[in-house]
Image 1 (cartoon, rainbow, N blue to C red):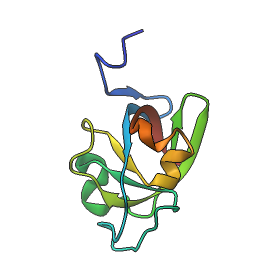
Image 2: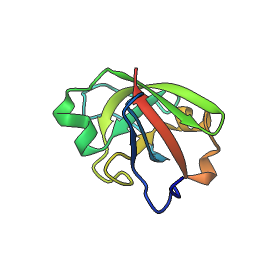
Image 3: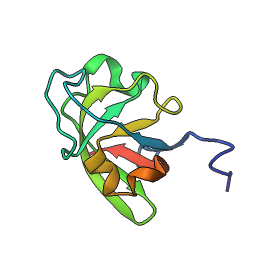
Image 4: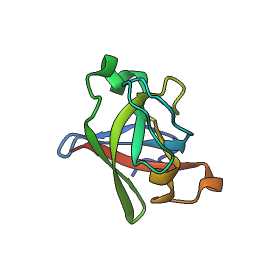
Length: 111
């Protein structure tokens, strides 16, 4: 298997899953136009995945180790880690890890 940190983006055609990195941020009014709270399970997608807002409102499943969380696309993250990195609300990130960790490898896909 290829080391994750040497090849940070992997596609899995059979499930359309992507492996990359997830960080967290304090949300407000996102690029999709909705007011969001820290406790909401939401995600900001990289520019390529945000696709001009065409995925606003869609759900994705994010997994880290044995944990997963379903989140709604509400924002754009032009500074996310890598081409397919994601930024989670504190509530969503805490479902996977602790906030002080700050960044975790994840696998995610649209539901």
